[in-house]
Amino acid sequence: MAGTTTENLNPMAMAIASATPSVQLQEEAEVDSRVSGFIGATVTHEYISRWLIQENKGAQIQPYAEIDYSLFDEKEGFVKSSYVFAGIWNSLHTSNSTDFPGEIGGWYEFDWYVGIAFGLGGGFSGNVQYVEFLSPGQAFGSAKNLILNLGFDDSPYLEKYAIKPYIQLLWETDGKAGSGSDEGVYLEIGGNPGMTLMEDGEYPVALSIPFGVGLSLGNFYNDAGGNEEFFGGARIGVAAGVPLTFMNGKGYGDWSASANLTYWLFGDGVTDANTGPANDDPDDIVGDLVFTAGIQCNF
Image (cartoon, rainbow, N blue to C red; front, side):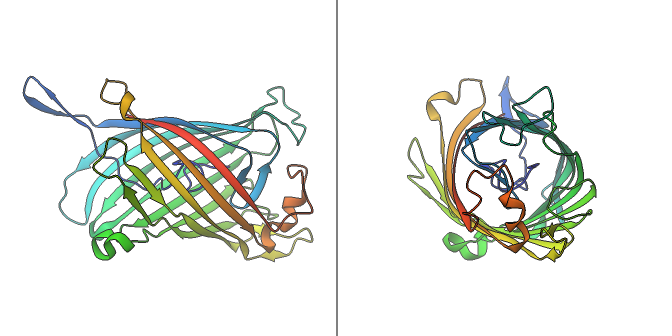
């Protein structure tokens, strides 16, 4: 149940990042392309969504794609740029521990989303999106949600010590993405400080330490007794990304590879839910260390 979240799509750092239309020269004249986007896939051994274990047996392959259309990029005023976007995200599982009743057994999840993003003055950016979490394998019921992402680029002020904080609010409008008994509201607060090694080299390496906490602002997390819980958990990781320079500049988009290692600490809001069939070690529900690798093409 990912959507454009910090934990999945950018190996999957922030879905808040502003899209900059590409510029190409044609007969010595600049032509701005309003259309951009990306495609990619990640692979992991444990799929966790908002601190809820979805699967930790076998492998989970998670392809995704997004297309963006720039509305304007004026660079003046408080709202400096804006674009609309639409995308999909999938999770394909080699092991079906929840015994999917659907005919498409290994296709655990299919999400689609649409939204609008803004680049704002003072280093702020944000987007609003509608996303549906669906299960072709009928592993869970459909969930419809509204998501608000807000981010702040503090690097002009803190330079190499920048935290790049963000917040995400998710409103469940129909169905459940959390462990509560009714539609609720989810809050995530985090950051993504980092640095670039070999910045002037052919293969610069972007390193970061993404972290976050997941909280319920009302009925998102419940325990087995139906009691509301506030704290879903915390996470911290180490992520690295590198451009695949040998593939770039040939008219097939800009390719990059990424990897991250994240420790997920589970809170009271997910303890009972994480003892379900998706967890092959229900006695070990304090936290999990998860490795994810991915490849992405921006165009």
